[in-house]
Length: 122
Image (cartoon, rainbow, N blue to C red; front, side, top):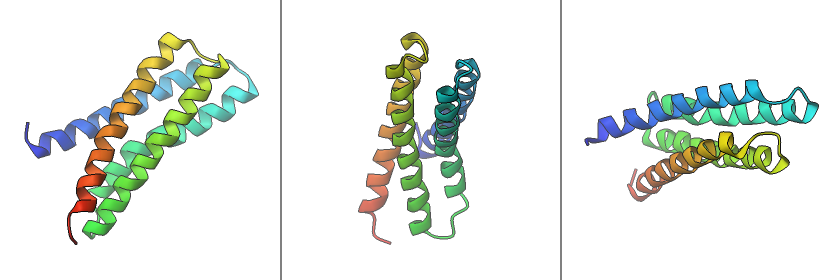
């Protein structure tokens, strides 16, 4: 697999992940705690892919790296919110575990890219 298709794959995975998070948030119970967490997880999860897309139009390598770092932070935040949903019992483990796993995998991919970007001289 070439570098371009790997980048395209991660963007596609982030987009699909965002859609799955939207679907999950629409299934949450109609409770105040669910609304607050749903809002947070929607923001952080959709930010992952949005920042990778934003990186494409960066004006410098430093700016490009920064967008990837923000995406990684959003991934970690998403894992936190999904963990809260799981541990609070607001969602079934069977519904949330695949999302947590995908967030972890996306984080590993983005983290690897950040490490590579940091090792390159600007």
